[in-house]
Amino acid sequence: MPNQLQDFLTLPYTELEELNLHAKEQRKNRVPAHQIQEERLKYLTDEKRIKAVTVLFSDLEGRLHMLDYDKKFLVKSWDNLTFDGSSIRGFTAQRESDLRLGMDWSAFYWAPADIFGAGKVLVFGEVIDKDGTPYSGDIRGVLKAYANSLHEKSGYTLNAANEIEGFLFQGSDAERRYHETGKFEYVNTGGYYHSLPGDPLRQFIDNTAEVQRAMGFENEKDHPEVAPSQFEINYSYAEVVAAADQIQLYKLICRQVATKMGLTACFLPKPVVGVNGSGMHTNVSISKNGKNIFWDPNGQEKLSKFGWQFVDRILTHGNDICLMLNASVNAYRRLDPHFEAPNQIKASATDRGSMVRIPIGNERSMRVEVRSVGPDANPYMVMLSVFKTGLDGDTAKIKNLRQAERYLPDNVYDAISNFQNAEWTGKLLGADVKGRYAELKQASADRCPRQLGTFVKSPEVQYHHEVYNQFLWNLF
Image (cartoon, rainbow, N blue to C red):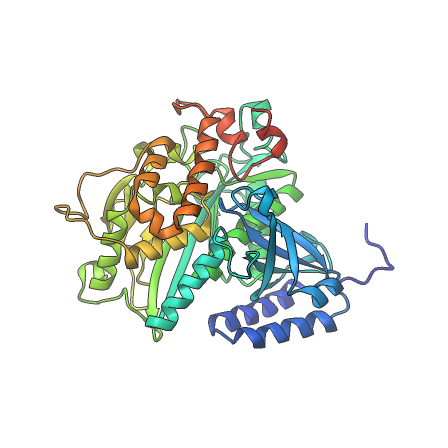
């Protein structure tokens, strides 16, 4: 209930969109960091109606964490923010718990007050180690450093757009209660592109799309997906770190809107057996001096030689990086060939069972689509593994590499083994982070049935990294 004595910031959606699009343009144009920092601090100082700044960061598995800092405190102490890293799965040991948060002032968002609360703005943080260097377990920071180095060295801008599918289920906290109920209940059974304007799924999609527009996503289209109660809300591409940030915000917005409706937005890759699972098709391209260097009007499928070399390296390392793209026990249910599953380590313009697809494109839109990605994967790890593999990986001497009969693993145990045994994943993440990530995945797998079987088991939901609950986890 509103308190008339409070005067906290609440802006109309149209004004929010203008502010967020301006900030997005600054980020796209690489306005110098010190200039953005000065502008943001002045804004926070001058805007008296802001009470708190929500700082966001992600753990090694991609779970989003949020800390609210009092605005006045943050303005004075933004360069000396500490937090307990030992409480974050996959971060530091208890004896080395102190980490710092730096501000990525370019990743600043104005959020709708009816969804996020009045008087708040959001900013993504960068995790900093005790010695002042970027923390190796903060994959967002690793991705940002990699993207910046490529831009400085080669003039490359890495671009990505993601098609993120999810399910809307009856009741709030449906995932946390799955071990009690043993089932998810649909809110709608209409199917692909079909949902009546007033039903809960359509209302959810409409509300979520409005919030995304207000936050500068530049929406393209939204619709119910193939499976019952399944949705997809598409928006435009962005530079790679901004694109990964938008994935985190997309899932946060979906969950928040669903919760306010008394429902659950779920991003398990295969929450229900017998219907299509949810993917996060990752469309990538690289530009230089404003030109898309994946485009060649005379190339095969109009993809340039540079683009095909990128594809060949991803196919070479497909099994190596599978655990980074399919990060959970449940993800391997989705890699089922009966439901258009992209489980073949192939490249194709038409076959949707291929790991990599070459969509129809033009000079502006030509891209490579990595289809095997699950929506629960760490988006920063996905982007890092796709781009770094495509640019810096090896090319196997396999006859007919692009169409050879090779398949992604159908269970997490094989994926963990491939990841651990691959020299390439050590180059991607470093030995320490690679080891910690493998340990986290093994710990989840150890709590789940080894055979997936024909129905979703409670442990694969209960011990899922996005559903993580310390109390439930420690009951094992």
